[in-house]
Image (cartoon, rainbow, N blue to C red; front, side):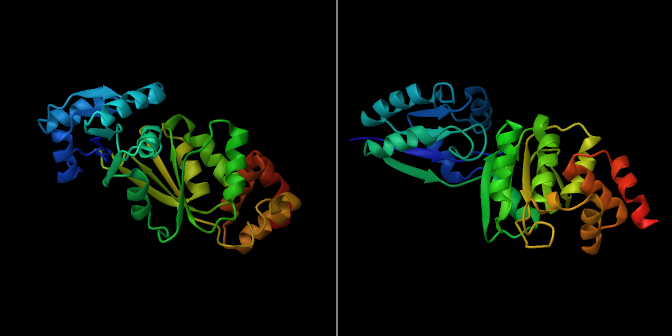
Length: 281
């Protein structure tokens, strides 16, 4: 009789954020398939769990999946964990889960921590309808194309981002999506957890002068149908002066409008000021 594959959600920071059910399963299974055995060892040691671990990560996922399926078919029970959160959500796991289902093996999901959900509900933005995009493409052209596909989506948008790409991604958000409400959440449940709220332009300006550290979740307001953004590229058909007037009609101060126009058009702020001096003098 085949064993069971347990999908186990583990803490994203604070080791106390784990369910009693997951702890029992981790104790009782024959083996734990872990994204990084060193990371998982810290969790297991904290709770005095002695179950053996084997690695299951992006670089050995296909071969290791075949190995785990063989053990499951022999009757062993396997717990699948990632470094943090729920396996398969921007982490390895989907290949062995699909293979187990195809082989007729029982798959049991044990719910628990997921960074995207924790960030969404803490953001204060609408959470009744949302889309989770995970990590955006590293290539800037591909990243902007993905954002363009999402520009008219009314649902709240949730992304993961690495610290070394944060600034460039924020600039692309502003350029493609316009100046929407946004929440940046860093190091969820950890000692230096930080939640920063504002418009994309404000947060882009803030991060310019700070070194980005830790893991980030970005929660962005969905499309609201405001004048700038009815057509996600409508500003391209406006002069700089018209672009400024549109934003200021929506309530932006002159200073903030200059900041947004400069970001969206890829212009130095001094040039935008030069364009509009005559208009507003």
